[in-house]
Length: 74
Image (cartoon, rainbow, N blue to C red; front, side, top):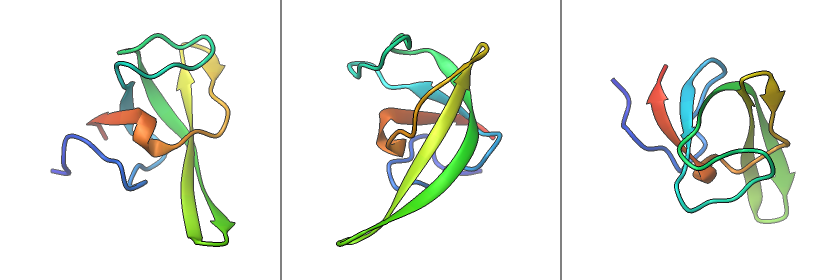
C-alpha cells in the first residue's frame, strides 16, 4: 500500500484524494474528497513540476499542485 499523504506528485488517475484542510480553492471545501481525473508534468526552468486535476461531484479543478491534496485510496 502506498503512503497516506503525497506531496511529491505521485498521484495517479483514479486515486481518491482529500482537499487539505486550510487550503482554499474556488468552489471546493476543505476536507472534500474527489478523484484524480488527469495528471500532467509541466516543464519549468528548475525542473518538471507535477500538476493534477481533480473531479468533485460533477465539477473539476483547474491544474493544481498535488501538495493541496492528501491520498485517500487508489
